[in-house]
Amino acid sequence: MTILALETSCDETSAAVVRDGKILSNTVSSQIELHAQYGGVVPELAAREHLKNLLPVATAALCGAKISADQLDAVAATQGPGLPTALLVGLKAAQAVAFVLRKPFIGINHHEAHLYSPWISGNPPAADFGNFQPNVSLIVSGGHTILVLVESELKHRVLGSTVDDAAGECFDKTGKLMGLAYPAGPEMDRLSGSGNPRAFDFPRPLLHDAGNDFSFSGLKTSVRYFLRDNPALLDDPQKIRDLCASIQAAIVEVLVTKTIRAAKRNGVRCVTASGGVTCNRALRHELALACKKNGFTLHLAEKSLCTDNAAMIGILAERKLAQKIPGTSLDEDIKPGWELA
Ligand code: KG4
Ligand code: ZN
Image (cartoon, rainbow, N blue to C red; front, side, top):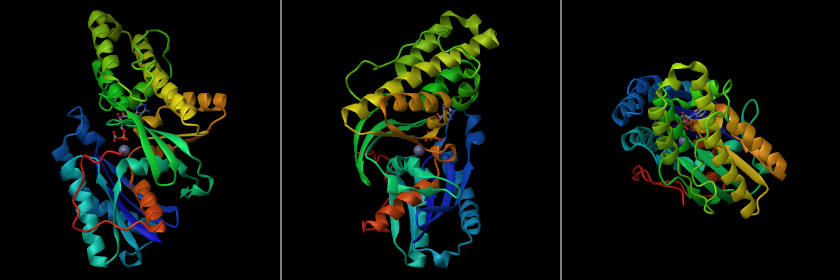
């Protein structure tokens, strides 16, 4: 089966061609530089960029896969959640292509697709569902922090999510307080490499709370007041590195502790993680250590598949078709608030 998948839920325009579990192409055009000058994603600008970029990106994906449109068996797109006008561009384009080709259309939940991206690996990348194990999956990005119990393929239950800011948002906003450019997460990761994670003691919100929810706004506020009271720290490059490492340590400790605890409680032996923050080296390292200590298998999405991409949309669409799950009507609209259940 050969599928063209489109992803335009936020600030990446992406198209991929997937065939029989293999990713033949995965083209991603990022808008980060455009939004950086505004300090965050501007929804209307994102939608206009998607309109401009979708056709070249989709053409590049088809060319890269050496596939012509008449060889496609189905078309998929992210239906939600995401920015409404951004979602609209990819969804309506995919529905139009499916209509013209008279092929099935599959509308995909963006977060459900993240759940399976850690199972894609290799060169060329392919999904390895033969080794699938029930797992607890951490989806951690600029907009979301979600813990999900994935009982079997396509069967999942949300255990908890953030009650305020997402972990990536906490990186970005605390980084901004230190004068780092948007998105600050990657730069904080880099600076932390030569910083002392024990230099400053920041709160670990909800770490000892019995539930599976997260909260990061208190940590952000704590950093804000700390910097207000100690502004001279920002004049010293080493202190900035120490601050980055200390904030990162607080975020990572909460993410790792709660993920491992959820895995133990739910009796699974496998942990997975995806989403932009999963690129973070400390998070990858600490999750690996904690999983080793507890005898869990760990599947981390490859860095190129952590951030938003159409390949994961195509892989999930193919699984759904293989399991005879009916396609989505061409009359269906975007679902901007379609949270995982
Ligand atoms: O998944 P993603 O590309 O987009 C959405 O938010 O949907 O994630 C972007 C987020 C940003 O908050 C960015 O700062 C964060 O992921 N991020 C990182 C790293 N790379 C990306 N945070 C910490 N360390 C990183 N290496
Ligand atoms: Zn995402």
